[in-house]
Length: 395
Image (cartoon, rainbow, N blue to C red; front, side):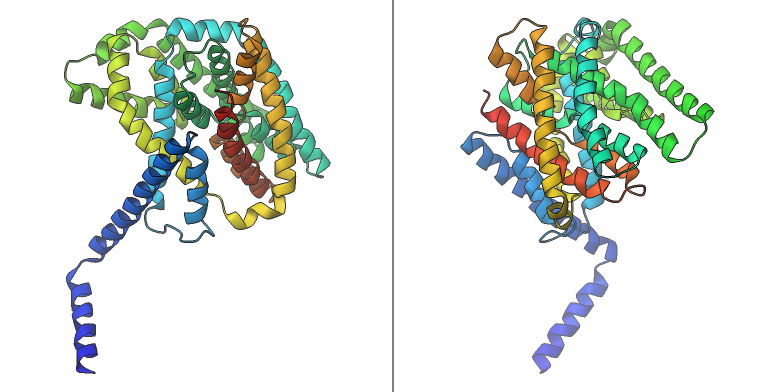
């Protein structure tokens, strides 16, 4: 009795001595430590088995997210921020692989492929919404969900598969860039329509989005050498802080005017060339790997497993149709590069994964059509796993 009493008093005394903020910080550190070590174990397992770790990161997120086995209550906000940074770094590092000449050429040559991609991949989602009995605007949103591939997941798959230098990947990059640029018009347009805005408001939103993208493109294409010389420095510390800060600044500016933040980060990568590009790969590569793993983990955290079974049949059916149309889009786009059949199929498979934009689009319309959220979550999870798995067999 006395012993139990003394233990209780000691525990209460210790709790009073340790400030609440310290207790919360310790829980955050513990949760983050367990999560990151767990991701490391999954990455080790995937490496041993010879396939991408992305599906394992997504499943881990499902296990520890909303409705999962052990939800992370304290560190979710931190993981969310880390996930956003991970996406920016994925796109920045992807941009480093291409010069301003490559981007200019891809945008000029890739416009027909971008149009084919839109027609093939927007249509299944839009028609599915109509067949489900939805109104036109929710169906347009579902069309956006099926249209836009996950540049973040695809960038990671290309890096893991060592496909970045393959000749057919220039077609894949041009399609992804055009999709992201299309989102610069689509997202503000849909946001205004959902809010019931006037035609004038819609026009202004689209004008500012297009103007911002145009300015960033001009700066990246015309002043790449000057920007590279500004960032260049013999000190790794100075170079790291300057480059990383610029990525965040440009991405933040893009996001502020309702343009894709990742496309801003991508264009910063495009603008850098020469020795500073090599230094950027060396300095930011480890950061990209850490935060990219966090991005995929957080993606799973945001999905409630309980919402998936009800919409799974529709999501899988729509996912299989989308996978087929994406393969056709990539196959046709890569064919313009005069590559062989296997390379064209590889380009198509690379485009299958859907992710961050699809979830964002669905989130905009959940109030209008409640079924859009769980359908998009199940659909995206299916393709986010299917894409990397199929890429494993195309090496």
